Structure formats: C-alpha cells, structure tokens
Length: 213
Image 1 (cartoon, rainbow, N blue to C red):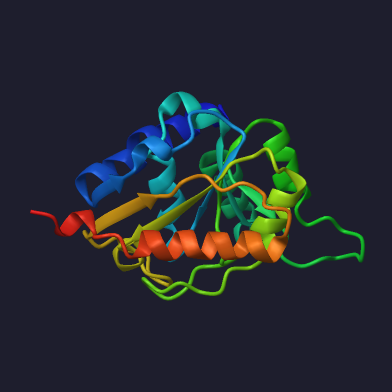
Image 2 (tube, rainbow, N blue to C red):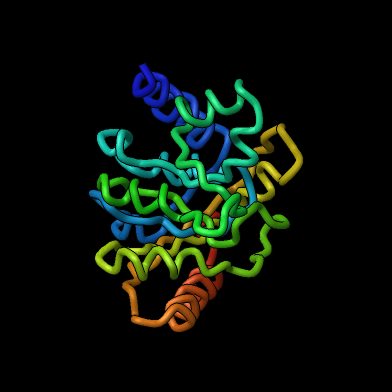
C-alpha cells in the first residue's frame, strides 16, 4: 500500500506540478544515479527540493529513492508522521543526541546498506530563498563511513521562490537543476567538504537554463 501511495504521489501529483506549474530544466541529467546506493547532496530552500529531484529519476527507482529529513519536524504529530513515512518516504534523522552514544547517522547508513538513493541536504534545514547556508559536516561523515558510495552535488535554482520557507502556496517559477560530477571520499573530512563547496559554487555559477532563448 505504501508503494502505491508513493507511486501516485510522485508519479502523478508531483510530476504534474513539475511539468505544468514549474518550468523545470535540468543540466547534466546523465550524472544522476541509475542505481543505489548513492546520495544526491543538494542545497535546501523549499519543501519542493526533494520532490523535484525525485521526479527526475525513473519511476522504476522509486522504491529505492528516499529523502533524508528531520525527525523532530516531520514526526512531530501522527498525521504528518504517517504522510512523511508512507507517502513521502523519508529517512527520519534526529538532529540532536538524546544519549551520549547515539549514532545520529545510523538511519542513513542503514538505508545505504539497503542500496537506496538518498536526497540529502548538507545545510541541515531550509535557508533563505536562493542563498546557500553553511554546510554541516554530516555529508563528510557519511562519505567516511561509506567511501564506496558516490556523493553527487546538486544545485537547485528557483525552488526557494516557487515555495519559500513559511509559505504553502506554490508560485509558478522557472526552476533550474544542475547536477555535478560524483564526489568520492578523499580521506579527510575538511578536504571532502571543501571539494563539495567548490563543486556547488561551480554549479551555482552555471548559466540558468530558464533564461536561455
């Protein structure tokens, strides 16, 4: 039942929004993963971010594609938790330890072990529209644990204006998604995060496809 709900949500509702409400353009689509495990590591300005990226992947991959999301936000009441887990299909992540030895990244590691493709936001939470916030080191910690897993930088432009933080009404807006080359673990957390920042900055400075004539 959960799969059918997700199929309807992503295969029908989300794709209708992407196709007919947003003017979505993708550059370097060939860099998207064709199998898991893999991580799409993107900037985060809107609740549309994960949904838009998941819509780019073939429906055959849907059972293995899941966004990583804050447990304290998406599991804060029963109705939202049911929707987030069964329809959106999130991997819930605790942002604060309850006990000293809690492994906050355990759900992510388990999902990768199952061969899933995860949408991950290194900023941690939604920032101001079209502005990059500071990247946290969670992505490097995951790469250190799973150096075999490709980490694919993805920069989105326009989703923060289509559905800004605090708003629930989608505004038609041109959206560009730029997919970077996969990153691999370099042996050092600081160096890995610097390579991610460099990749995101390069993608952010590519010419927006929506402005092309």
